[in-house]
Length: 421
Image 1 (cartoon, helix red, strand yellow):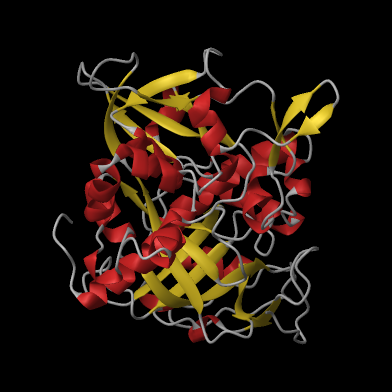
Image 2 (cartoon, one colour):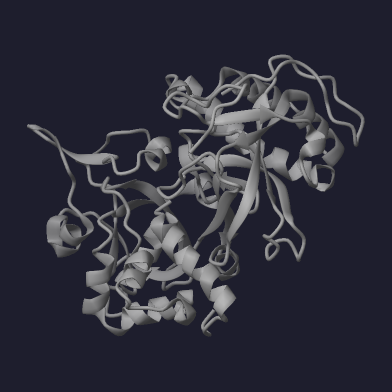
């Protein structure tokens, strides 16, 4: 993506820079079906048959079930570890379905997986004032780095400070708007943590927090935007780092700042040209990046967990099946069928119509029909993510109180009354 884009593509990328460079890592109307979880009055869901889901019959439900099982393992573990799932408003019916799903033997084919979802869930269309929702994308960047500073690698990424405390559940940080989500613990109580400018100015220097070193502050900034990264070390080995908290300050989009100040034009933008613009003048870049007070800390993944990119609750993410949502509206682990007819670049020219699983959150992901698609790791995934900004519809699969009898292939399942979130 080193070349300048045509105007239409530039507008899409501009939207990515304004919306997605908002992430480290989501007007509703009432209806007869009730409302969403506490704290989201007016979010409503209308029961619909599976036949209303565009492309449902053609989807790979076995792939969706594989992603769903990854969520279930973490949700059940969280529930066993002190009712954390209850704090996150995970419906007990969903946990019960997870328990059943965990006992499914061996490899499941598409027909069996489809019957499982149709038997245990009821689709609900999301009802709100907008004509459609909004889908964007994210990915795991792969960058060169070092465990020690040297002339090539001198920009540190930092570990979580020991005095950093969470003021809200990590899963809820995207739904909190301008509220501080983290703070610094002191003897006199919690106080706002240092901003990005203060951290860059040395607020955390000489504390032994340096985890790794990247080539420059621009690499650090964009990895913080994505919330994870794969780092190639000088000896050829690779390690994976993952979001481990933030300083709690709300995110400010540098893309929006640059446009508002007239410093970059939409028809001159590409991801590569933005990075080049920032690197051309380090002092200018620093001033621009400091407009975003938010700062992300990382930890190194080791052992089995390093095999995957992790979402919230350390759920292993699945490219093309994991969806970041507003956890103030949707229960984590919920299956969400996404229909985006204009999103075709990730599906070989076909409409994006796919059963996904709510497995992540992000500071820019707010609203009942706002989603962020995880596209995978590396440059190819990044190329897909950075041009994704498309309208789409959500059909949230909510647990049935009584499992329906599996319907023959091609027939909508029918059964018990759906449980509302």
